[in-house]
Amino acid sequence: MTAIEENRQTALQKLLGTGKLALPRGVTSVCSAHPLVIEAALRRAAAEDRPVLIEATCNQVNQEGGYTGMTPADFRRFVEDIAAAAGFPAERIILGGDHLGPNPWRKLPAEEAMARASAMVAAYVEAGFEKIHLDTSMGCAGEPAALEDEVTAARAAHLAKAAEEAAHRAPRRPPVYIIGTEVPPPGGATHALQEIDVTRADAALKTLAVHRASFAEAGLASAMERVIGIVVQPGVEFGNTNVAPYQPDRAIGLIRSLDEMPGLIFEAHSTDYQPSSALSALIDGGFAVLKVGPGLTFALREALYGLDAIAGVLAGTTAQTGLAAAMEAIMVEQPAHWAGHYSASPEEERLQRHFSYSDRIRYYWPDPRASAAVDELFSRLPGDIPETLISQYLARLYPDVVSKRIAPNARELCLAAIDAALAPYSAATATQ
Image (cartoon, rainbow, N blue to C red; front, side):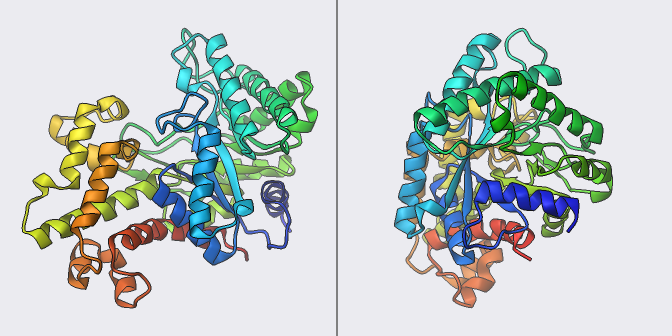
């Protein structure tokens, strides 16, 4: 067994537990708050007899509600309610907190932002989240955009202490941690991508060293033993209009650094839209946690817009009155989630609002008007949608519809579209 395989096994045992299930090669981290995405992930986990890792980000879910309006405790109930309806056992769900740190409050002075971040981390742990990604890499008011490793590590230790104290109070099982100082931005890049710089091996080793020192200084030696991975940049990213594919040869030095980090794995962010071969190569290189989020809601949006087109064909109407038109009106009225992320002409901005890989339209699905528009769309469609229209507008799902593996109704087609985006992750992480 290679060092990478031993590290992967150790880290996954801490994350997933040993149980009766064989450990997979890796685990997919589903980062989404959309109920259909969560249901699709639970269905796939049930079919494969695996646990499922579902993560909420600091912007989605926090003690102040986030953009979903949910606290960590609310999110846990939300996921468990979906699981109950799907017949999936709650004990097979692992909840994680992603990018937990001062990011939602980074425009405030550091002391205030960190106080709120501490309260957020405590709320996550008290709600039973078992995997905590500590992300303190961003500067706050009056600070540089990126901080020195030592500052990042000291702030991470501060948040870990809040997490440990919360676990003791709850009481909850203490969480496992992910650390990192070279953290890709949540939700993808905002610019066209050329070639992404890969984290240097010495930088990864320094990240571990400074965190060990900071945790030790804070009296958190036992918490440091539960650090299972480091977020690094393997050269994988997506922007609004293009994707940077993984090139294993560029990450050889980084991968070799795992030989000097016993028991640890790397966590790969922004793996959305990577082909199955790239995901498998990431797992082979020790990136045992593959995070995906926008790629899943992108697949859902594709299905919804395909269904919108089908509804228009069936009714003999134009797209000006359908779901896409409703979403455009909502996004233009409330531009906060996309303005500043799409820098282009008005025509290009309109295109990116709906079709960007960054999928910032996902921020708008919780809006009651968006939910009503989706419900109205489903009501306009027949129980069984004609196969010929599925072939025309949802071609990737057509073979499974014809073979009767997918029912030709709107809801099942949406779930199948999300599942198709999850399938490469299952192939990459499957038990050997």
